Image (tube, rainbow, N blue to C red; front, side, top):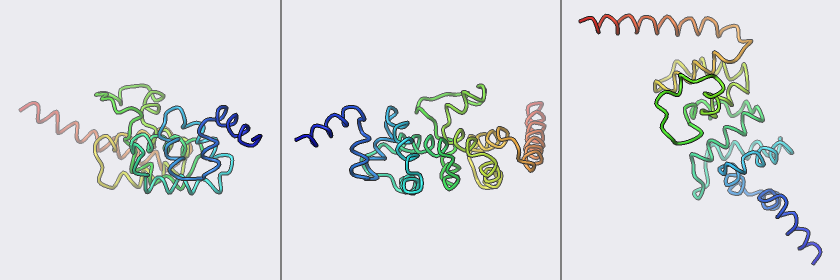
Length: 191
């Protein structure tokens, strides 16, 4: 009776964390990550035993439970990977680099301040949080096929991470390519 009462009190005080701690079920963690209110609690839960629980997060990045909203899960995972600086998550974050916090349409997301851009693109913020290793991986990924938004996000990530010597030459090449494209676009408009 006392044990049941304690579990009830803890459930009330800690919410989903008690259920998650009792079961250790990836689906429970996925549900918590996918809920905007539960993301920070999920990060705290994983941080408390990082070595055991980061692989659980990485497994959710590969296969999401069927009853969890995939978009919300990926947003929660990006926040978690960034907060915990999980370098093993860099490939996932690069694949989801253009995922937005909200599914609302913003026609000019790249004309905002860096802080607003990072709050709008959680994978971008996570990569920046991870640091130089993420910058190097982003530069390599830039050579792969990408949408224009993914390219902008990749350049933004590289530009926001200090202390990566090779970033300077990468960004110079990007500027050079953009200048060539702008030149031909302007020439075409003259015709």
